[in-house]
Length: 255
Length: 281
Image (cartoon, rainbow over all chains, first blue to last red; front, side, top):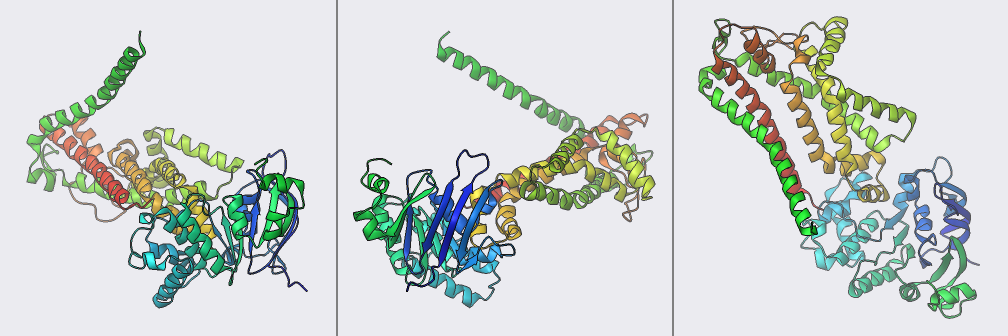
């Protein structure tokens, strides 16, 4: 008997203001805990939109319409009275380009915990070390904690952004194409940390490429023009796709 | 005509335009320095005026202008920054916010003498503050609002949206995001707007004419309800109302006013470059 999914998306339809077709159309998808779920598809398929709905970042955009439900541990995250700030702590997000805050490495990590009221310096020190270790960055920056974060290399900055999210002790980590600006070596490091992190977290990721999706996916969901075409274990979807469109896309016939 | 030739002509014309803009300001400064430097000495800067302002110093006018500038700052800055944050971060595009923006633009266009009359009507008479530093500061503050609001809003909007999204996604509330990310990064621009606004206030005559300025009051102000002399009005008085006024005293006064305003400009530039060096993105 399968356990309750961590995230459950029910018949989700979402449109931006003035768009001719919905960005997402009738998506139903379960995301299991302690797995890496990869959501992929060509540009304009709605992958990033779906990701941003999972921690309600799309709330910042005006004029959108949404029907359907998104459940986190069985609770509707769009229900009235939901604490959105609390939700975003539980569901953290790493963006495509590393955006370090204009502050030191240490301050980037402690920003989130401080906002939630953690003051104790020892506690903050612990958080800094734990988060940086989990993001496989500690050894490289342990002597540079008080340097400006944008003095780090691009790959280090992206792992810093991951560490910054881990500092919140979230339950789910969303990654929106986190290796788009990274060299292959840094990409491998980020992918390596994700494999470690899934033991403790639920990971949902929009990948950089089909190859990356195939490398790291426990489960994979293929979106096309806002519709969910196929959702299956990674090994299956990338070797024996059931849908013709999935096969055409992953074999490079379009995309 | 070849493309290179027209490029050269355009470049020359643009250079001329830019130079013509600079020439008058330099001439004004040089002229006032030459005419006024003779009057500047320790007594002129630190003594009370005497003999119908023809002799002595201009200390009360200097102090008055400094006090009024601080008063203007207190009256306008909190309100202006609050309004700028509201407009930039919270206001949606509704008829109300459009009305507010329209009002701000129009406030900036109102002649300063109208502010003076309005201050007389509202602060001096209706609120019964009398001809006082408070009434003058409030009037100047009102006049300063639009320029500070506009520049502060501009500075806030120029903070990249990505920092807001990051802060929100790290569990920050809207206000925490503004307080810890947006305002620190917008601060240099906001300060520039404040100083530009105060500069204008420091040099204005018309708004203080009916609300605070004393024709001749050879002592320092004692309370916020006191009248005071002020440099711009004093300059107006000694240039037009006092027969037999030594010319170098007039230009000396103008020089002091100019120096005061320009030094605020220098401070603004220093603050900006200081923050720009600290900026880390």
